[in-house]
Amino acid sequence: MLRRTSWAQSLSPEDFVRAREGTVERFVPTAGFVCRKGEPVEHWFGVIDGLAKMSSDWASGKTASYTGIAAGGWFGEGSMLKAEPRRYDVVALRDTRVACVKRETFHWLLDHNIPFNRFVINQINERLGLFIGLLESERLADIDARVARAIVALFHPVLQPGIESRIAISQGEIGYLAGVSRQRVNRTLRTLEHAGFLIAEYGGVRVLDLDGLRRFAG
Image 1 (tube, rainbow, N blue to C red):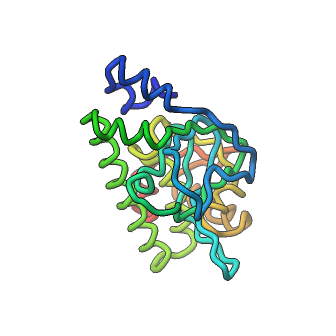
Image 2 (cartoon, rainbow, N blue to C red):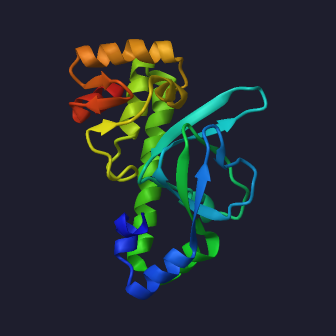
């Protein structure tokens, strides 16, 4: 996975060896935690394959779902830059393999590699834009737009590199990401199909008009 990522491709052979030696792979079963709210931040994560959900569980029993992370996506760079416990959970929605870059390796790369710095800054900027849009959607948009936004986020060109026109995802998984029931997702997908934005296939979604879907999501 490292050799396929844009930030690793910018490293010198010596720096790449250091990055590889500071990275471990971990298997997380369905419903398992990639990382948990409140724990020390020891790794920066990349999804090798599978699908995970970033969320936060409240004492009231409610869950705030932030976004999904598909294969090729990296997350946790903001947490790595702060000296505080992690402020969110990441849960595997299906069996998932993750690359875990150790804290000392992450910070060594920040200190020694300008392209890596730019990658991290760009990640943070794009995720900030994503979360601002999510906040707006939660407050102002209807359920159809929320579901559309959850799908659009999985096709983000920077945060989800490598995703083409189709993603393997179930309606239940979309529901987890959007915070709605599977039945409600099914209704929305029919609406989006009728508008020509996508096709709901067995075990996945194929997007036909990503720009149109983005406009619909708001």
